[in-house]
Image (cartoon, rainbow, N blue to C red):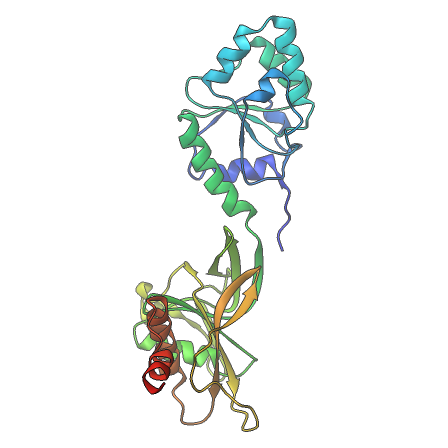
Length: 307
């Protein structure tokens, strides 16, 4: 799991992917400040001295309305209210288009070592773009053993014990026109409350190990269209060696789930045995999953007809 606390420098490097900004003051302090939340706060009541709900470690935004309110206050009260804000260990204050700090604001910010940053976007555009980058930066991340494929538009995570045939199945799927996201070690990231994204791990993201052959380069073998950088996980297919003493699901009335990073993902156990084409079984699993999403469950329809 990733560290829930990030340095301001790392946050700014992440935000700069989509947001252009200029550091007004406090540049020397960006390595010392830390950010703890993936949401920013637009200063409002805090400017009037109500700071009980102000969370230390949360990025702050002040727009032109906030600046105009501060200007309506006397210099002494303005400085007092600003000190109550900066004393809450905030990492930085952003100024969207139309808002700029005055001398008192800069003075108080410098005394607390808080960087001031301008960004020429309207308030809500800046908040939306910044929070999108912060959500990605703070998203829980784990490494997972398996092979990630896109099959008929369905993100399929193929898992199973070592030497069960995951990579061989993936090669077969690639030959059938599907795309690979990663093999062996996959990076899983949770976005929001119910979405898992999978990506390959550098430097093996576009490569695969095949026992008896060695490392192969998927791009050179199948072309650039055979790979994809990131894919939502819609289905987990676990390959396991056929066990004659185990009872496998033959109807599929109830959908099983596996929980990863607090996200429940539909899950299928597929027994592997000589003569079974595993790639075709994965394809059918993906197509059947798409039908389930549309409310079409063949086993349920059959049960309704029989009863």
